Image 1 (cartoon, chains in turn green, orange):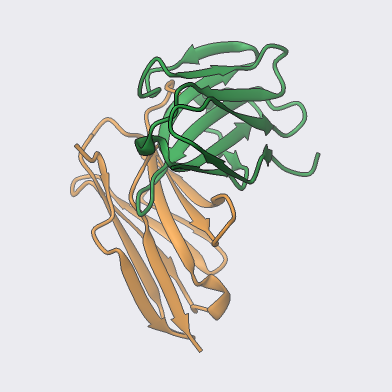
Image 2 (tube, rainbow over the protein chains, first blue to last red):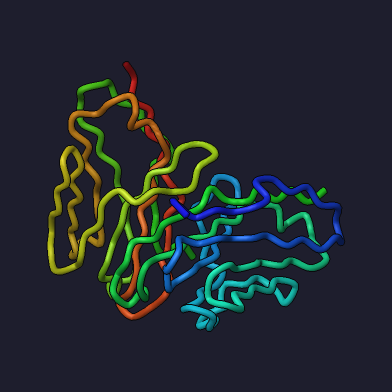
Length: 116
Length: 112
């Protein structure tokens, strides 16, 4: 595709509900990232995939957060038993090669999650 | 513990004048820096980057300056245009790592 695509664009969840957020990276991009952006803050790193391998998940705030990229392309970020503090914009980004080469990231428009 | 700081949440500049956005960082090991621009309801888009081996990088109207001793970088936009109105994020990384650390952003408003 032309860019990084994320769906849904908006998600409203009741507290305690499970949600799944989808990211379609740019075709052929090796690296995929998830970031969380709270209101008035900058994006904060959640996790990094190189192809299908999750090489860093140190930013995931709790074990309620789980991400996968089983075939090295589409990725899903799942949040179980959502809490109000999970309300944020979740940004997906991809890059053509590994970040070790100081690649710039291409971001999607994000999924705005509101937990009521 | 904010490793990358943008202390000015907002900035207003007259069209045609220079916009200067500032960013400070605490980790002297950071060796790659980027600026991203974000419009409402869109994801951040890459603007310009600089490696720590340089102190200046220029791309059209945009110039990034890096002062390693002060752990400070700045983005200059000359001349500023109304379409430049957006939130600007600086980000830093360490070579060989997977994380970019972002600042909290500066909202630039260019007045026509």
